[in-house]
Length: 136
Image (tube, rainbow, N blue to C red):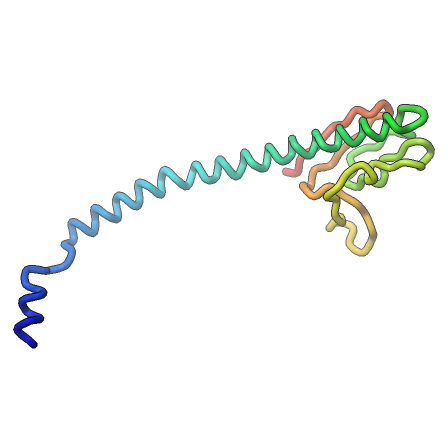
């Protein structure tokens, strides 16, 4: 049995130090290429999500103004995350009725608010112009 095992492993000595260093160098080069690209994709995804949310808010404002009697907001709203503060027709319609996927604002714990989930804040003009402020 011992002779059989010697014959089976004859000539095998394992990996040399040079072979291991070559493999580590290849893995290092791959990591140097992949890591910056992953960071860039994450940043681009965040920017695109902000743009998509702005488009959704603008579409909801247009829908709300189309259904309102006056075609205007009751008052301009400065920098808010809470979509319930955007009103028309003396409060008969608010923007949260036209948006889905709203959540609670973590800054105002304990109160019921319907806020955008990206962390952006929005300013609304009386005629429905929307301005987005992204988080830093």
